[in-house]
Length: 531
Image 1 (cartoon, rainbow, N blue to C red):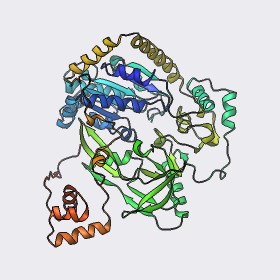
Image 2: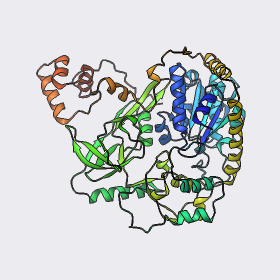
Image 3: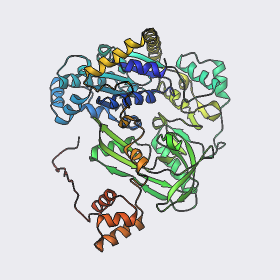
């Protein structure tokens, strides 16, 4: 199924399972749908199974959004207690659409608990309280955490999933891999037909330790290996590391969740010669989450890094934002350079990343899908460097394989149904859904609200289109000058003119330095618990 067809189905308000191979465009498709909803003033709750996945779609974890947390089960009393919480009830009541990304990592019990809470809040026995629910993910990738090592109950095993009866939209376009031989290997793993011909391709990518340059990323299973590798190689480079601190805003609990899921660290240490990876998409600057490069220099008053990419481009990245949005409003935000050291990373954190090349050791793979996730990070065979592997690395869960056949068949049926439907009928279905959730229909020829532009474009990006200086980093010299001028009774308009800043930026900095009282102050009482 094409992305366009999937969008047609999503716009009808049908519950959907949006799936496909890595690189098929699942995140892009869901972001297109979210833009569509925003333009029509329809509230969508954007959630994911993990903090890392949530940062890719500027959402929050489903555990936090639903108020369920990390419970393994819910009693009737607990459902009522969660539903009575004002902040949980408010977000669920306002939402008309619920997106759950990386659904493969959620157990069936979690799907059922979210269903129970949404029903209680909405006061409806319809699946998920009548919300349009969109499951996004690929069950061939990392499965739910299975602590007791017994049979895994996947999300699709949940009674709530069956009741929602999502339409399978299986995306078949490929936007990451462009190597036919490599695509045949990945496809063979998914279809459980990996044979000697595919093994020969893999054998051709075997390397010995120490033969691949440090500049090529390593994928590890454990954070400790990643940190020690990155720190050790950074220490070998000459000079003192420059440290870039993350800027945060919002409730502490939400900020902590964003930091946990963000690929850029809270304290980013860089030196000239450091190999880095971009951690966010920026079409304007032509880099994506996974673009590799090297720190060539530090420039400007703030000493920001200059990155030379593998294809020779020179990029001077600025702060970018990761945020939690709810009902169209920003709840928390962290800002950091969209970079991380890239000599090593975990397989888990590599989900959603496209790499030009990587070194990996699949000898200790123990989970179905773990090897597939690692392999599918790279774009082509020539970028794959394997230290070793075991048989499990090329196996998929037999239950997932069987269910995948059903998903493909269901997707083909939906594709044929909508393909044979008259355009006028599809348009009518779209209009009916918009009306049913109280959305604003856009007349033919009417320009869509620019606020519905892509989720990858954060508020800071929008501001900088008209105001290039917006949220520009304050250097030590600028801050010192601001303090000196303020002590000499310079007013905010004068300070803005002298420092080349907006008056709002001057006021914000003075507030942060404690030199003036904030215009708006909402203290959080110590007795209050963050959401």
